[in-house]
Length: 386
Image (cartoon, rainbow, N blue to C red):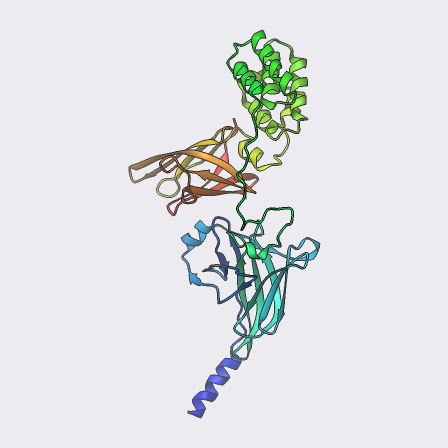
């Protein structure tokens, strides 16, 4: 018996230390990737602490592909948002400000913290650490979920209302009835001098109204007043109104401005030759039309069209061995931080289950839109240049 025990000791001593490696956070869901094929769920936080071990399971390659894991972002140097320290079995994660995020106890004493990683939106944090197990140093990875209602990690902001207390109803901005009536009249005005007068009437009420500046520029160009039209577009480009960029992008593709598309002043005003700086401009900057080229039995053909009014139309066409499946979708879209969310109506309502996340990812020299619609439909579309 002692000989078998001695042999086991020799095997353990001869076994090299092993290590888990962190593969990044999912871009479409909460999990994270450990080593080549283990998908784990980050621990939730309650009262500033997390308990237990993350639940992990081995996943097939197609499952890992659908979860779209993003390269990890190490927290180092002056730009680090998080840090971690260890004392005996206790791991403590803090913000760069020093505020505690979470404490967690490992099963064995922690030797040292190897690396700290944050997700793209800093809603999840992972720590790689070493510990001694069966006489050897090994590396483990644990991650924590800082989002989805994990308010315990955030210090209360005295300027913000207490979320635990009843809040008064949100007051909608009061619309100016004169402005509403003027906009309605301008939209219905016939082309020509009447349209120009109607849009100027709107500007008399709201001098920086984005739609009115757009309408005035279009009417001026129709009247062959090119210099005036360019000056009005320049005024729109200098506007601080949040929707100004939407009307500038609209002008890029409106037939009313087709005669100016080669004009350097026009291109500068509407931003045709500069790189997009906001998510809206990335999504709509080429006209809001995106597509994926399909291949038989492998990848569906996808055409996605998004409008300025935040609606979209989507067609997913799959062809395989003579069978064709052409599925249309329609709904609404919104910008959520650095990503896009498609809302698919369910009996006239949009619920969390009906929302499909889309991330803006680099595809070669272009920016692609990677969307996951349930478990069976996933695609990456590229902008269609008009």
